[in-house]
Image (cartoon, rainbow, N blue to C red; front, side, top):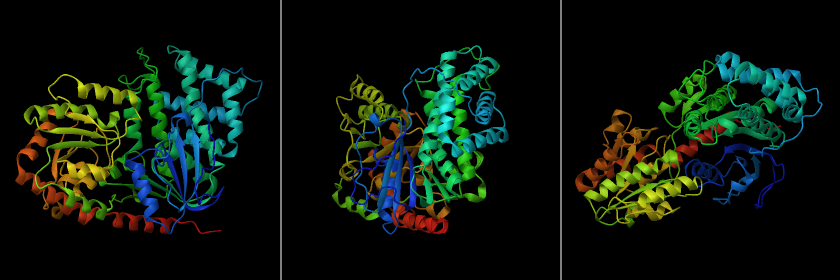
Length: 517
């Protein structure tokens, strides 16, 4: 289900054009922190430009309230929701678009059989051409025509006869339904001088449709690598049917058949989005290389690091106590990708050694309530922590940073986490997993940068023992802690300010703008 609607805001203009259209999947303005905070800072920091916000979510019911007040230079906001209920409806006696069915079948066969990039790209290109030309007919024909039923049953018989037909049928429909919704959305997004998408995935697919439909320049900024993160989520997802009867028609016996279909879809959409983009931005060199490996044309890639509002966090240093606070904190969403459970296990080990230490988890819990409940149970369970591990819910970082001794990040995937940079500016060293550019932030990159020293420590993923050991080393050694604090302050002030980031994007937008008509 997709629906664009105007929402109350002093400057929103119905159908108004903007300098930049930001296409956002599941983030701003309804989710706090991370990418959403970055978007808010970007829009607010470039008041001379106007922005339209296109939000893509799962369902309206789970969207929640706005987490941010829209800056006055946001002139348009619309929402599109991709989840559709399973509705039984009799097939209709419609002839159907034979070309679209053929392209869809080729695409599906390619996902199933692990076809080469050229074959899959050609099939996906053809599907997109049909969606751009006549999205409503494609949707109607595919969901309700007798021709579609015939095509699906034939593909099932040819490629997956040992699988559950019910799951096969709904998987195929579920994979196509968001594409139809996004094709309809593309007709309603107001014009902009440049399109800016902050991921591949469904937002990237919409950006690709708009690029083809209007010829507007397209910029991608990936904080993390969407296809990698989506793969992790799909491997853990409990809504995908697991068929253990893996046979010769699957190329990876460690991943179930239906999961492979979904993973293949997002990988190919990612490659298509890269091919459509004029500029492909990553936050650090490691992710740029991953983008290239995933199909991004190297000449269109660049690295633009994030930056933080230095003065805001520098002011927090004056509020710090003279002694190192016996508090460790993980500041972030309570979701599996942040691996909160490893933090809790590490905190137990720290508290066993230093009983006066408290461990705080400061972040919203609404996104994955079942996971948050598991974390609360683990924090409260036996193990000697005696209530010193606390889930605080969402907190303002301005209130948290002056009160903590070590900032901890146990994520299994990150890009360039702002919370590490913000902590540095506020005078807090960090212990982080070796993901994204955390090692670069903590240890430095160039020789001059590394000469500043380590601003904390790096540990491997899902290693509570090592995490606890590095935390204790900092808390037990004030000289080492203060050296780490000074290294973090120097690094963020030299390389990662918001002023640098905003100027880089100002220049990128100006270089990308399509001439105004």
